[in-house]
Length: 192
Image (tube, rainbow, N blue to C red; front, side, top):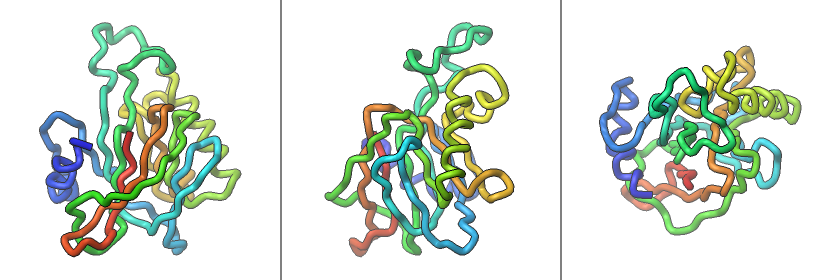
């Protein structure tokens, strides 16, 4: 979690839409428009344990991207290429106070499919997103372009959301609370 201090320090700049220089690619994915539901679920695209959270703003820490490939005309194999873009960490800020420190307790999230969803969708919507993300794992075609950095935000039902679809490491992630200055949970960190 050595990326967390840099991410927390960058939140104001990311909220202003600025690019942040540093050893990680940091992005503000945006707020999930949950159309009044007020909650969202984090789960592997193929099911398993689901974690519920309050709606909030999602920030991402990204690893390698396609610009690291020596030959831009050769697409990487999404299943074997270690440079395939993926999400290292997600910070979902659901509270009203700024996050400052990670909490101690956490849970494991299985990510066997290599696709992690943050959403407020019924089962049929999750299946459609899985199909879209699976197509995004292959480098060719328009779906591959959608996932150029390893993630896709679908903010509303018209776009197929609300959902944040992330290409992730299949070895699993951890979910830990992030606390404000008074020690209260104000965000959650999902990380490798």
